[in-house]
Length: 506
Image (cartoon, rainbow, N blue to C red; front, side, top):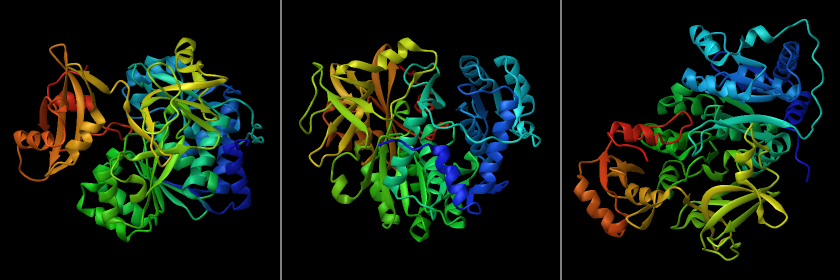
């Protein structure tokens, strides 16, 4: 099956229903007709600046109508859009810009002094969004679909060095269509985007909604870190769909206002980016039993998400929350320690992904690309080495166990940090918990960071944990914290936790 062209699908929505709301932020809103017209004009402006097919266009913009317009404008002329975090340090931004060598860096009109500082570091000229829109230029039709790169997402992964993941138009289209189909999105959908647009998990809310003709509602990222803002937006905007990380779900569950979800029109929540917890999902169901909860999985290198599963009590059972089954056109392969393919259920193996949603590679890093895109693992197929440990359960759903580098070996015993976190989270008086490995005088140790809702002690929590786990899996220390901090991608900020506890990362 041929993957759709995401831009063309949005253009078709605009031509069929130009007056429908497309995107609204706190400053302005645009209909589908206005969005496509603005994207065409901005594309003409980018072309006037010398941008041609295959060039990089850096988007240093917050979640906004401007970002959506600029991303579509880049696709319009065949350029590669590269979203960056407006909150990142200037040095990191400069490193990425120096690496991807964009023709233009599009900023908001309010970056001011930060722009000049960044420009001197990166050696790049910055152009504000409004300055690119040149009304005198006649917009052209969007370039036809071809096997080109749609966007590049920079991620540090496990290397600590930013690397640009190149996602082609075919992989992009396949992922967007699969998400829309799995979640049942349509023109009645009203989506609240929570995750920042420099994180590709956000694309599971933004682009499938526009692809389906729905309305996208945006709020400032900083404001959404306060649960009240989220709940107000869901109520005020009649939101029907949203998606975010399990860590963000725990933030919402910690608020007494979470009961408002049961009174809202919210129909679908999609979780992703981290392993989901059954206890968190059940807590959500307790407040809003009518909300359909989906779990999704997908490394950045495989275009947004490659699985979706509708969670129900029957699907979850008492085990880990399943990842589901692969999208059409995507193949999963579990490989054991001897390099053989695992066929049967309940056997943990290293996950390799093949099929239609694979990245084109890492920008300017052929050796690194060849290390993870392998043609020597599965006969006749190029597959991506995820570094994740997975098994297939007897229901046919794949289940995430942990990262291969997070199943740590301490004193000769393998310990899954996710499994330990799940146990700690389920203890009496614990409302949230996360386990992180750290360096203890050149030895690997594990710290459990816990948020409690009633007085307890580390000794008592350790005793309760010992009722479920062998001594070899218990944490070396238990740290009480007021909250589990999130990073700019709405995931757990492990480095900040370690730093505030005075512990050294591995």
